[in-house]
Image (tube, rainbow over all chains, first blue to last red; front, side):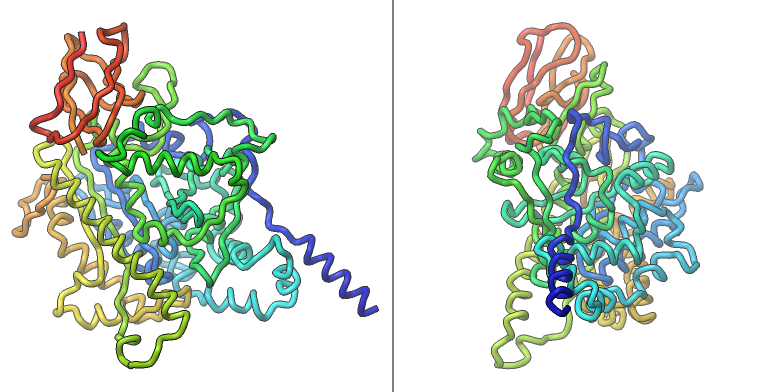
Length: 475
Length: 67
């Protein structure tokens, strides 16, 4: 009898499999799927264009992103709208993805008081303990996790569905964007072997010939926050050379000349290498990890859209109706954007001195944390520098540019108590305490209103006298 | 970021690597590097130009002529 039970359990384990992403069984079409061209944004009124990027950092990042959304909702413009209404794009990583995706799905309802707001639904929920309980203390999950085709990241997906996202798919996300003119949410993960950023949009799924539409948004949040070691990589199937693939994908036209730019602009040939990596017949699966490994502040995608037209282009009748991947160069070139505000919300924290407080050899997890965290922080610093350099070069143009950075080190000694509170929130999905949540809200309030480019943007929009401090970029 | 200015006798849409990026006789932002430039509408002379855009600025864009 025992043997029979054991066999049944092993059989059940072997059969457990999280469903793979489906193949794309129709020709690639930029008028289909969760992608920039299918949102209403390219044809909306874009005189004021706001981009947000939400970094990783567990509930600390989710809470800071949420607090910034609250600040934008409270910022009223002269025409009676709130600044939040002009947010067109949110690019997010890891913890920040939870705030971005929930806002994309439920809009301002997540900011209003009540049991369903983001604070109650996620920030003050013990998500990490729930996950640990699901992995270690639920015998049903022990059996499922024994399967080679079901792992902790799949379990995390289910938990995030239960806690926050329900069964919402990217089709639902697209529908609410189109109906409510919500922002285009880009959740970022990292493809492990290519070392490339992987965006959860149909434009990214096209080369792997997969249909994003029916996938749960919780899947993107799980991949985006799959911190190495704590979680195994999320596995996607690459159908680029699978007989089921019917997309007829062809490389975009910019690749024809960009390969020769290895000395003048090495970023372009590198992008071709990444694209060809997805098209490599040997790459039949992808392995996705935390988006922070490739870009912990989610800025690279928007930066590319601001500075490059290297994307897929699909003719659609007259030239002005063509469909494109995510690039803002047409909106800028045809003078559709008057003022462009980019707010980088970086929840990177510097906690108390730990490794250097003793001569003891740090533990292996501590060393691994340092190895992964240090390059991420340095890369984030470079990304912000690239943005400010780009904007500084735009002075005198019809479009005015305003970069804003929300980051804890910018809290002055006057606000040291708040800085200490937020810096000491660990990177986890533990519930925030009331004090921590208040600290994040206070930090967002101070940081956004002390920023000279934010105050200049608001005064320029409202036609009020500019603040004393100058915004030194893109004016 | 680099800039090009396409001189042409009338207003046409400028395509940079097939992407509609702006109008003729206006300064247009492009990424640094090699691009294929064409104009919308009736054929032009030349039909297209491959240019390497580098070291430009908004006040001093690369000037490209079509007829």
